[in-house]
Image: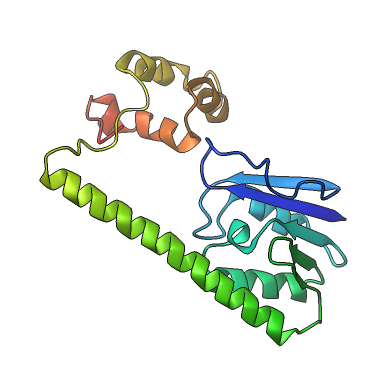
Length: 191
């Protein structure tokens, strides 16, 4: 089978530019950070691939933004008999086909991607620190109003958390934060 894997970092982004015109039997789309491999759709893909399958990925940074994770993932897929193609970089890693040049190119590009992510995080931390010093940083704003938060709590048990999250346009994880003991008592902790 041929699988396409697409990833964006946030739910506000879309995958329209990734793997345009690349046919597949099944597509997996994650809307999550690439900092590690603990992403639901990636895990489903890894559970479903078999020897002889092909995975298409738009670019290396769509698969991972961590060099070690990317190298381990590609190595594991090759050992499993799966071919992985990174279209933007024009790199293919087939089972039992050791290509030192491709591996070196992948490692360099992945290292640059990891550096880019770390620099972005560093700039964000610096900006937050400056805003806090200036008294302008108030922390993360609530996703929901008090009325919406009360409505969310009343829906627990009647609907599953995925449905509730979709209704309010938030993540499932955020539904748990709104139903924690601290938040039931009115302490919001940046929610």
